Image 1 (spheres, rainbow, N blue to C red):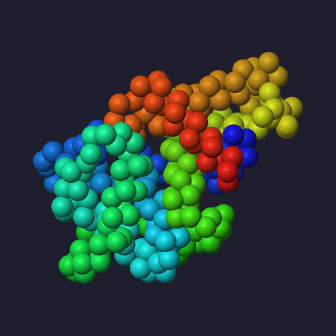
Image 2: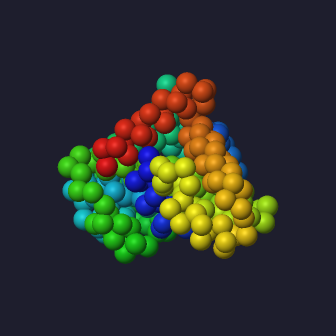
Length: 251
């Protein structure tokens, strides 16, 4: 996945994507206290706000209406315990959210009953979301738009995990220097000689550092996917990875 990974590695603020676990989703539907529910909802918003916004835009809504629909949806998640009715057979968080949001978009009467925007959810500036939408691929299908945004969010989340690990162990500078190598199919970065001097490493040590970073990223990607599965078996994770790769190839 060199191309899409490279793009993510160049632009993502990797501290902005906290973990999103299916267990968090379950907690929202089982009487979690209000403060816990709001924290859990904040995690969901940060990872899934834009994919759902993009779906709404591709479904024909203008920017303000798409923003309202997305904000209202997450408010309903908290206020109406939407996840309490989650179908256990839907083992993928992305599948459940898209199905529920699609139903919500079609339910105009429900939207008309809502008088306030956003509830306790985290607001994402409309300008940033719309700029990202207009700069992305012009998919004809709303579901494909959602999947493309979901794939990017997964990559960003995995990258954020790796960045956090490296910074927590005092290797933040190493991570920033080697991050572009995650999007390269080469055994070592193109500017490896310059990097080795910059980092004070011998070439063999630099190659080993790149290998370790890539291994950690692959592991983080599996962790990120596992957190959005109800039953994260190795087979289920592999299935989602294949789906992710298919989306990235299509994009």
